[in-house]
Image 1 (cartoon, rainbow, N blue to C red):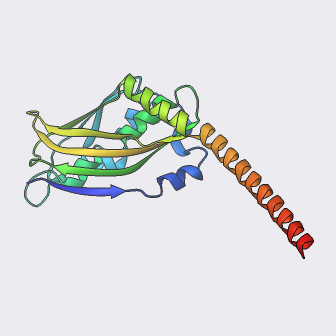
Image 2: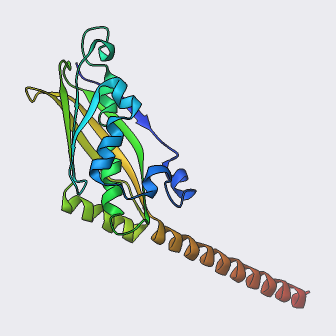
Image 3: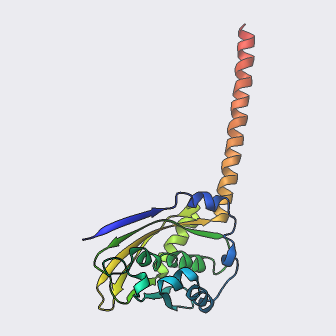
Length: 214
């Protein structure tokens, strides 16, 4: 019964390398209330009947629902699979982005890959709840601070009104600390320059030795 689809963004790291900031609304530190309002008037969500019921002030909890109507129902009378995925799509990225950048703007967060597994027919109103713990956020931050980047894997269940799991969405994020990454790149360039200088010196020495030998 179960089937899965996959979506992968291979350009996530390339986008991050060429984007010192993520632009658009991420330039502003919007409140949870404002983000919820904007998402609820966003046409892709409006058309699919996706509604954000709640976003906690600290962006560590989100609850989303999707009602079933004739225009978001598939051929066999259940929820369209693309809509089930859409209701889980942006939230972990938004939540991690807001939490890591609460004290500054030096973390970049992208969706890198995603998959969804359909577990039972989805009918009626369905829900998804997203949660971030302090432990998880600290782990993501420490990895990004130490290594320059982190690719956390997260998942969320879509359930019906009886609590039965309709689908499970898996997400892989790309998180980068731009300060650490910039320092790493500078060090790498410095090391490359040092290697070039050493190679040049060795080449000059070898040439001198060969000249003396001949």
